[in-house]
Image 1 (tube, rainbow, N blue to C red):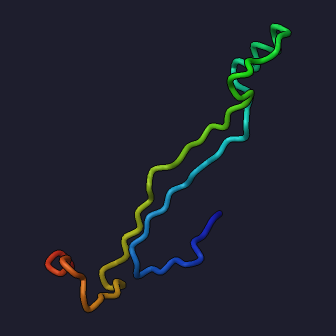
Image 2: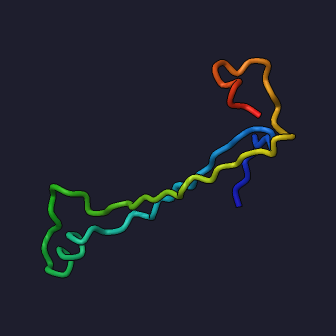
Length: 79
């Protein structure tokens, strides 16, 4: 399990996961092997799929938030 070494419970945070699959043969590579021919030279023989999660938002409890002296333009919207 991953943990954020810089996590501060008084700060807002957002996290997401990115995943890389191990490279796998393209369908053209499978077909070339099945047919006993060379794979096409104009495409890579493998592909690496990628995915990412939805964001995970962390909002601290109001009592934990460290308020700054100046939030330029945001003061009317803060608790």
